[in-house]
Image 1 (cartoon, rainbow, N blue to C red):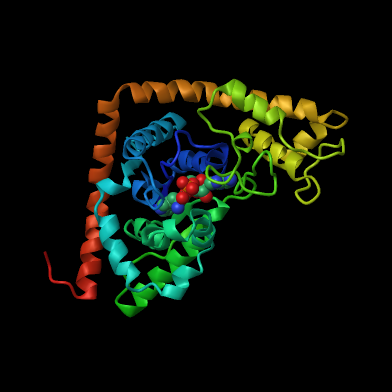
Image 2 (cartoon, protein in one colour):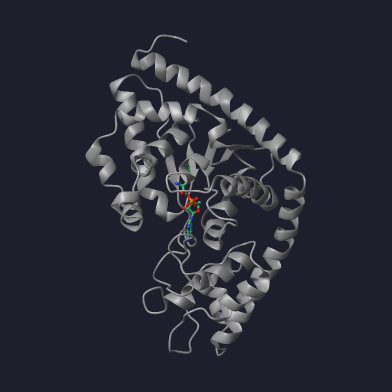
Length: 331
Ligand code: TYM
């Protein structure tokens, strides 16, 4: 079996619709055909300031959401990054083959550092993509399913893998990004030309999976559209309607062309009502399941401990090879 690996940060009390449609829904289906490893990068989360108590809680909520969405710990390896020390250790080695200029070109760093301001931008935020490369390369996955915004980080990961392989000896698999078509970028409901994002979107533009469903329905009804009447997919001219069509299409597994036909002659209000219903239908059982997993913290922590142990077996092997190849003494 080929291997897939991906991660999602525990930086909010709920995943958002972009996370689910751009990445998580594929994580669930990929379990059938791949040896899948999924993890919660809490070490990435602290590249911007986090409240310790909140972080611990959000890490558990993240795990509960992944389980509720259908990540099956019997088939996949589910773990928390900081419980596998090899991630930090490989990061150091990879930092030493990463160009300063190369890291400076990462657009997410540039965006986030502007947002944080010079005084609050940390070296950790700068090193973030190198940690992400370590996350991936430790497990030698073939595919890394992510949304569009992670493309540049994966490109860096591929470059570092190739560089290490040539400079030392073939050690890493050069991973393929797995960026889905259609839902790779879900947009902010209030600003349908910007991606939906927990840090950048306004509250009204962001659909959190665990929010009160009445609140989410209201956000959908207030989504920004355009002054025409026609419901048709056209990202350039009708970004708001196109975003709603993408969301409805993904939630109801109905092709967009079919939706366009269904809504011929109908108004934007109808489309919004149906998106809201689809969302409620999806989120209601999800919330109940998340609550169940959160109610038994012991069991949750045990699932994560087993995942970390499995992950360490693979990661430890890779790291030992890396240490040997760069010339460290055996430990
Ligand atoms: P994160 O936690 O920001 O997001 C998790 C996943 O959700 C996708 N995503 C979106 N997809 C479509 N539309 C959107 N509006 C949208 N917003 C987010 C992201 O592309 C991602 O796939 N650096 C990563 C976490 C990470 C990681 C890794 C991923 C750390 N190490 C190793 C893969 C492999 C991040 O911050 O994702």
